[in-house]
Image (cartoon, rainbow, N blue to C red; front, top):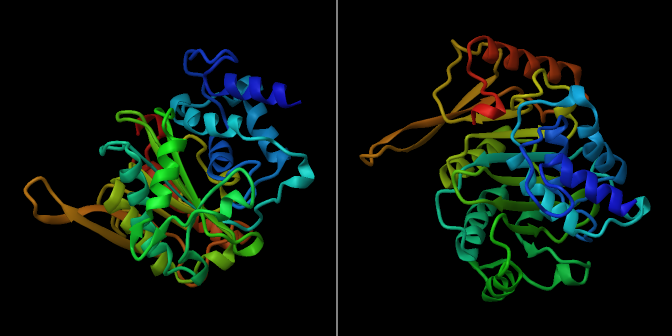
Length: 336
């Protein structure tokens, strides 16, 4: 079973079992596979997913009709980490129900040194800490629960010397992609994990946070502030916040979904998207160092947390997606 999953997953993401890169195979279920990559499979500590959902992701490529335009190079970022993890029995995996996910797709313009990657994560955790008291302390992930509790990632607003030393060893031979993952030391309903899967530009890199409601916030403005901070750190091509079942019910499978919030690096207004409940401008600096709006966070729900099980929430998010596509405002993944 393990070998079959390994071989099929390699082929699904554009590799053959010998590690040779094949012409870009593009598969449906891209976002499900992204969610699998976001969670540290088979490792105690960070939130995990079910073997059944992994299998659905990996077998998506066997359906010819499921071929869609979303580059296999981006998905291959997740592949290497997934296939290097031990897959335990299904009983050994806890399903991440009712989780929230923040994801960003970007081209990493800085170097991929350990110090740069982990410092970028540290900067984001400052704002993540405003979402819940469970997000104020972070640890390096490990192969076992004991190992995942050994190394504190940050202390006194700095990356710890121990974390840098451990990551230098772990990533010594990991060039493309380079994966840094941390977690909040809590399991179950308070669990959360954060990772960056970085590739040299112009290849796409991914930043993902996954957390249960107890490690999240009901305050949409606090969540939007996290997205704004991420936009300033990485200048992403898009950023999204959604509950983990929304990717199945968004309107367009070849484009980012709106979910609770969607960030795009462009100015968007209520005149363009009247269905949105709020717009948050993200400010930055232009080439001359002048302040200007570099992007917009479109918010679908403001009176309560977004839930994919709430038909009204889904209706609003879907309507925003349709409105944006009608005006050519919502890019295809292949356009990113």
